[in-house]
Length: 298
Image (tube, rainbow, N blue to C red):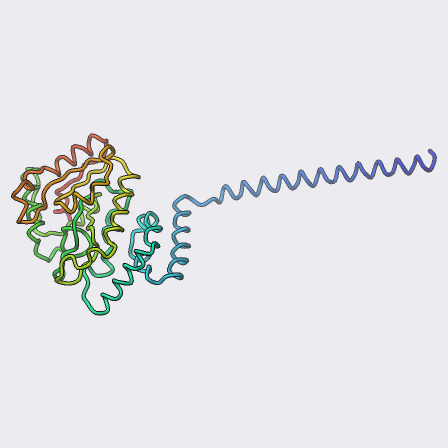
């Protein structure tokens, strides 16, 4: 073989070797990428873990930006927090929190701060079956604890709550009136007990009306109306009925009546039968009925 031909042969063989080496490298890289993807898939966190990580990250981010929202991140149910995160960062809500901070410096506020969002902890969005709307918290000492119409066990039941029990006895013969007015077991069973206004100045009813709470609780109702199906809304009195107008009646049952206060209850509340109607509706939707007698459970 002549020298020029020999050189061309050597160059050709070197090119083949380089190509073979490149193919082997590419194949090895693809295999490593495939193994890496498989490992990542195996280690992929659960949806619950993802949500937890997001909540933790957002908590750090927002509390660093605005200390006013620390109460929401520390005391609100995490599921509700994720739903309402955009809402609590809106300017009106930040102004509301500043108002409350100023109020706390000079006035007594009900309920106590740790209990303002107790409704969210007792009844997360995924467990809501029934919504009862109140107006604002009880304004006397020791009554309000974050659930509308409810009072702690050692506190005497207010007249409106007593009338609710009277109406229940007429509606459901097996209902046994409890010796207290603590409605937490209803809340744990899926009854969201939500006031339109979540705080009040001591001994001054409606004193925190028009400060922003109504907008916030409208967002709660809107979420439930749009994102849930087959809920029962109990709206008692003109204020609650007006607030519940946005509820989609095609997807939910809306029950209305006069307020259970002594002034209006005799005009139809005692015969509204809302509790049996609620259970009939839930049953028709394949859901478990509410045990209204659960207030007598430990």
